[in-house]
Image (cartoon, rainbow over all chains, first blue to last red; front, top):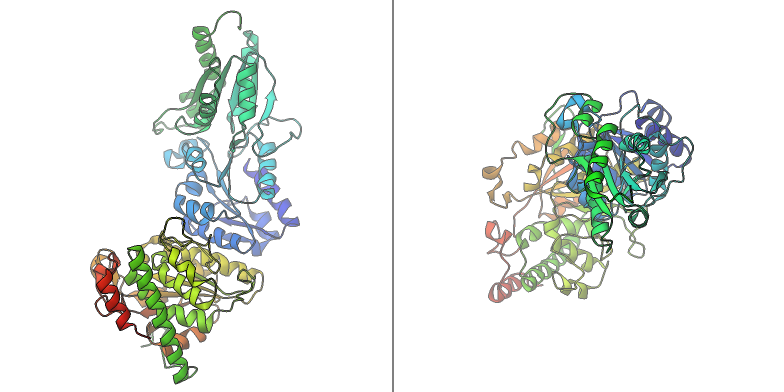
Amino acid sequence: MRNAFVAALTTIAAEDPRIFLITGDLGFSVFEDFAGRFPGRFINVGVAEANMVGIAAGLASCGKVAFTYSIAPFATIRCLEQIRIDVCYHNANVKIVGVGGGLAYGPLGATHHAIEDISIMRALPNMKVLSPADPVEADLATRAAVAVDGPVYIRLGKSGEPRVHSGQPDFEIGRAITVKDGTNITLVATGGLVYNALLAARELATQGIDARVISMHTIKPLDEEAILRAAHETAAIFTIEEHTLIGGLGSAVAEVLAESGNRKVLFQRIGIRDRFCHEVGSQEYLRELSGLSPQHIVSRVVGYLSRELSKDIM
Amino acid sequence: MDIGAQGDLIMNSDSENLTAPDVQTLESRARQIRRLVVQMNAAARSSHVGSALSIVDLLVVLYFRILRFDLENPRAGDRDRFILSKGHGCTALYATLAERGFFSKDILDTYYQDGGLLAGHADNHNVPGIEVATGSLGHGLSIGVGMALAGKHDQKNYRVFVLLGDGECDEGSVWEATMSASHFKLDNLITIVDFNKLQAMGRVEEVMNLEPFAEKWCSFGWSVREIDGHDFRQIEDALTKVPFESAKPSLILAHTVKGKGVSYMEDQLSWHYKSPNERELALALEELEL
């Protein structure tokens, strides 16, 4: 996803002289092309994220579209107050790019995991929160972020994410993408776990459960219509995120459902429970431990449905 | 006093730009602004009157002698930028902007009031002339660095002035910004530190010693001058000589007195918090007689 983002940004920057890229000394072997082609618009501020965000806000106040870049927790939480005031309060045209959303930096440990960033960014007024599913969506999210005025947080994976989309889907901020249609239940996933949701849906199909899979690439503003439609058309909604259960995608969807008046739809959140990850291992290993692998999603769905759901819907 | 081979720290000599009548005019403007400040803080019963009085003379020279702007078009792209990073000194900025004609003085009456236009920290949303909303310390200089970078990139001639408090310099982000400004050779960036030696809980040297303060800025690659922040000739002289060196940001370390202009407030920490009561206000206005 990182490479897709950089490639998209480099392409856009060739056309749009407002684009600036500011990094907190990260992106070795990633930004060379951008920096070589637009040396005046590539700024490495060193390991100083607070300054990075303030500088971006200053550039934006002079008509620039300023992208900041770091590993997701440093791009967001390390400089949270600068994002809150310099960027969001001023509605500045700053796009915050966090690489390594969720557990992507697996063995580097909890300092490098981003599992609270969605809820924290979502709480900020004026902030839009994007969480693309694959390189295709990362490319489209980057373009969409430039096209919209004001703050955007783009939560990227890292590298090597499998493609969810074979073609170019319609991508619009605030409008979910239905990756697979289904009539029994809906899996609402975000980020790299959309792929796992798809794999889980395939397995569920062999067990007679027709699952819809939605890529909720925009957490804020949330596509409430897609959720309400799923609540109306399918019997259960499961949210799936590589993020704490507190305040992220699951919470956002729960808020919509709780106020919708729909008393029938079943609802479960799948995500990371309220703890730091002290285990050591790859993203795949840690996903497995956190119950986020396709197999875990399947057993969670089946287990829940078999307890809750009546036979006629099954 | 000279520090470094390049003479980074230059003692100020008196300006010959200002005539005696000029100084008188500035003095009278400063008194008028101080009157507005104490009246605003008294009416609102708000804090930080001492912090505001400390920067009035600096603001008067900036807004009446130095900054390039167009009152008809205050957002014009080529304007000089000014950021009050110590946003709690906002009554001085509001009064200066009104006195300079950015907006009507009637608006000053709405400071701190329900439905008013002027908040207790500088806010750029409701009135013209304020570049950046501040209030949380340690933000302004980074934003100034961004503006200065944009100016260099766009080959514009505007300058960016950032006014910091001394207590504010405890914030690590100030030093991130300081380091980057010299790294990027931003000689279109000028920082003024309101060095009144009092911060929220006591004397700066006791709470968190900044010394050797000027040398810190020098060693971070800035060209530094120390002035008396209440001497119009020294303020004017320093501000007309920026950048002090090419390819370097300029730092004006302005020695000031918190509460300046009102005898019973001068150098008194309590006026970081208190607002004048009716009797104290009358006394202040008497001292600030035009």
